[in-house]
Image 1 (cartoon, rainbow, N blue to C red):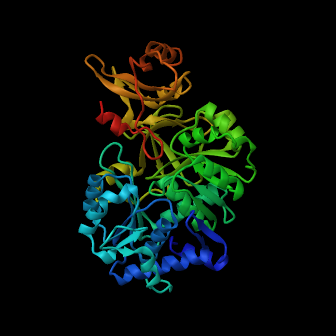
Image 2: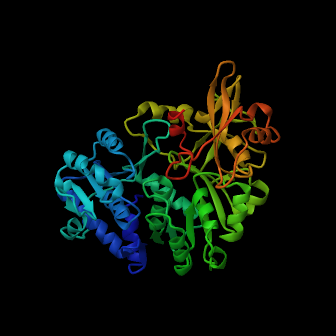
Image 3: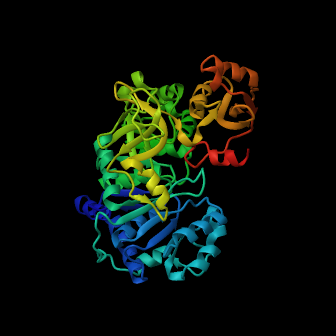
Length: 502
């Protein structure tokens, strides 16, 4: 079982059916299959082959996905880069991964890195998308046009590495999660098993493809034979227009995008009857936001608890939301959970510990990082780094990240719990809770708060609000009003940048 075969199957089953629509082009499943064949054959002709690592820096467009599947067909390993990285970050990642070839889109985010890429690779191994000013490269469409559409003559085994998924790196140098064809195919099939997706899906995606949540959803829809509509950037007007006009059945959002959609003036009047799956990733919906999305967008809201390293772990389904909204749902069919203490001993039901698991969808390890690989698989279990517990009904509760934990006077405090409480504080637009050094307690709790436009926040009032809803030791000892908070591309608080700035 490998990812490459999916395109041939789809081209055979429904050749004329649309596979990808991205605002620039429309590709049928047959076109998508043949173009990726041509691209794979071009790369073989340039000496790129099985086991080689190949980088790509490209937005949400057909070429991004064509390239990944082309590499899959020749046994090369994709390494998607974040096009928003600085030159220094590109330099470090090229040095670390040593790619044999590079796909790069000319866009505002990448203009400063062309020279760096050209210095490292030969022109025939740099494929340029939408290149106007770049020299010493090969135009993407020329590479496709110059090569045959036959299946590349390479045997791919399910255990061959498929892709290296780069983590966000908010707590240090990013890790490269290595996953093979068979495991990634199983992740794609899991969307059919756990979410009921099939080849009739019409998916609308605006999350960046260089992040696992966006890429995983896109790859799964294509693997299953669905149709994918891509937005390079989220724009609420465009999103709701496509949603209604194309009778979209599937989309995936982060909480911040949910907030933006709810502000759209025409949302209530749109025909959203086709929308049978709204996936939520990148954070837990507050009760207020969940209710609004369920009432105004779709009642079919699913929250996934997943990670790049482990794949999907649990899912909160619409039927469970009323009674279990404080959980991330029940674990999926493939996952076995243990809650372990710091000594890797299982704790009783209902007690906090690290969420550890066994799953056939977990990665094989971290690229060139045996220490991190050993730590991840310590004791024969995948260590998520999340703190939580299973309740008596088998629902998973996640209280925070082990690395984010604040240790105050010997007591463990999780910032996410306090942030959840403050998410409903009147006049507050955003919040992050961090640790501050304290001469007596070691660390103390501090809240960074962003006011809504036209409002003023009272730090003492915020502290009192927390004390009424939390144990006193969890309440912030200080509150700082700030203009904004750094966030990752998926809308999560960027705690690495917060730590650097404090």
